[in-house]
Image 1 (cartoon, rainbow, N blue to C red):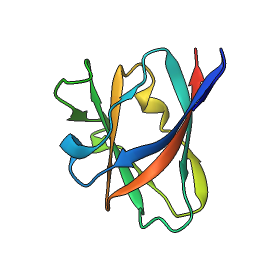
Image 2: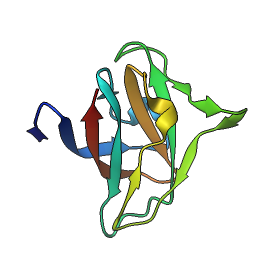
Image 3: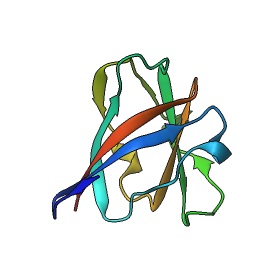
Image 4: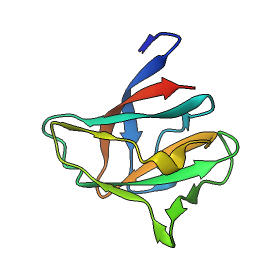
Length: 107
């Protein structure tokens, strides 16, 4: 992991089909970033779940009445949905089990 005052890179974040098995990521202090899906990954969609505490109840993130989802493909990077700005903790639910890297931008 590499940190500077402006950003944080978290590698090998577990994405899971069950939110309870996904890695919790601290989002407090970050306003956005990038999600990088490694080559060879079988992930094709990622949904966002947020909680007030690391061990809290993670609820699906909605915008405009629909759950937020990002369509992804192996070997590509995507901007994190801006709706997660202000979330304290984040878990990623995928259509498959996999890993991603998160590049987070601080406030």
